[in-house]
Structures are given as structure tokens and as C-alpha cells.
Image 1 (cartoon, rainbow, N blue to C red):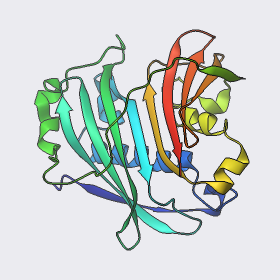
Image 2: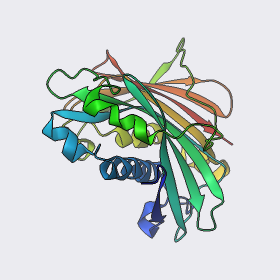
Image 3: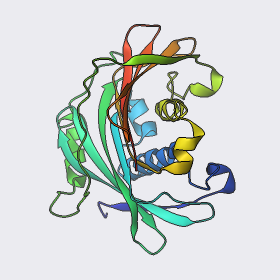
Image 4: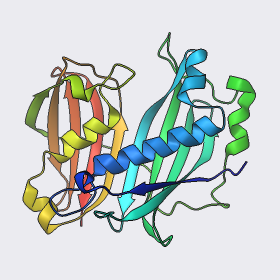
Length: 247
């Protein structure tokens, strides 16, 4: 079996914003679906894992785009596992046009957790370390974007607090990881998306939140093109941190 899979996508008219560009949340769902299908084909999908009370949890996601897919365009997403380091696995993506040229790339980090204890499991021993058979080294296939950065919040300002509802919750019973991306991008005015293009989005997930939690969004401007966002639940614990860069 090949170690790299490719999954097609089509940009539906209801998947784009007022500029005709695919919403980042939709693209994020395509990435997660590609990851899920790639894992499923190799016996590491959610269905198989749930039988032993395990599941995947997304820890970090960084998407960098030189262009954004537009309405009615066809494309594909390639995905592969770059490395496995005991409690985490690094998975990369290439987001490609129909002719094979890149819109951009993405990097992600995943943990395997025990559903009973909610603690990470050792990927190097789980199922006999079979996951190592699917690793593609950086020498074999490149993902030419920077790795995940660090966040340092010093003077972040509260800009919005929202309630969580039915449509925010995923099959695991907590707030869907893509919903945070959508809520974060909603902090920016329409003019920002009209006058600039989203170039890079990084998000680090810290803990889970659930329906009924209030999410507070704290913003820290880095420069005229870059903004850091911290999301806290119920005015306390940090749920996730993100960096948004426009061009």
C-alpha cells in the first residue's frame, strides 16, 4: 500500500465567502477527512480505535496558502505521516489544484488518547507499533512550510464572549475543532477579507470545551498583518491559541 494518499475535492458555491474563496473551515474539514480516510485504510480509523476505547485528538494545525481554492474549482489533498514520537504523530498535507500545482500546505500534530482515562497512549507500542510502517520521511516527501510556532500572550484584550450550542458539538461530545477556526475568523471585519488574503492560520488546542461553556476571545495584535488569539472557557482555562496572518 502506498504511504501517501490523495483525495479529491470540489468547491461548492455554498462553501465560499463573499469573495468567492473557500471558507477556511471548509478546507479544514477536507484536511481532517483526508486524515481520517488515510488512517482508516491502514487500520487506524476511528471505528477500529473505538473498539479498543481509543480515539485521535488533534493537537495542532497550521495551514499556509499561496492561493485559496475558489468556487467551482476542483482540487485534491495529499496526506502522509511524517513522523511518530511516542505520544504524538506529525501528519502533513499538500493542497493541490487540478493541474497538481499547490494552493498551499498544512502541518498537524495528533495524539491518540484512551477514552476511559482521557490520557495519551504510546503510539510506538499500540497495535505493535504498526503505525511506523506508514511513516514518510522528510527526505522522501517535502512539506515546505514552517513548523508550528509558539504563543506568548502579554497584553491580550477581551473582544468577544459567545455561548456554545448544538451546532458546535461533534461526535465526541465536545466543541468541534473546526468551529474554533470559524469563531476566530469571525473576529475580523469583512473589509479585512476583502482587502487582504488569509495567508497562514495556526491553532494549538489545549483542552476540550463542551456545550454550555462560554468561550471568551482575547486578541493580541502582533503587527498590521498578524494577530494572535487566545480562547478561554468560562473566563478561565485556555482552550486554544491561534495565530492569523493576512497578506
